[in-house]
Image (cartoon, rainbow, N blue to C red; front, side, top):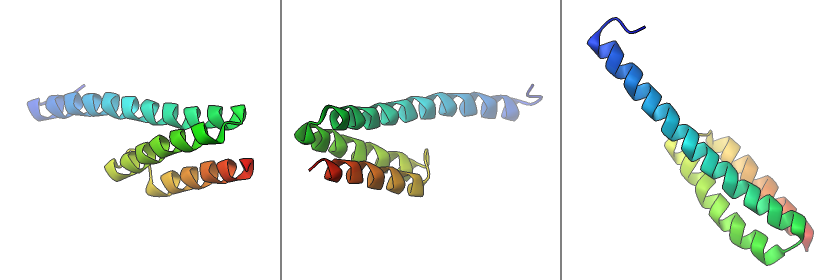
Length: 87
């Protein structure tokens, strides 16, 4: 437990940040799942549209430090390869 006013405030800020980051991470995962669903259904146009949203989401999370930039790049690369394999 925090023993000073400063530590109490930092604990409060850390929890608020953790919840915000978890929400953003969940939103990012949802956008990626939408792309995978479109790929599995075989709809390339829908997959490309969903990939555009997922790409933006991944880049934003990497820019904010919620995920590593290499993770974002790896995810985008793998998703794009699956979309191209559909053709």
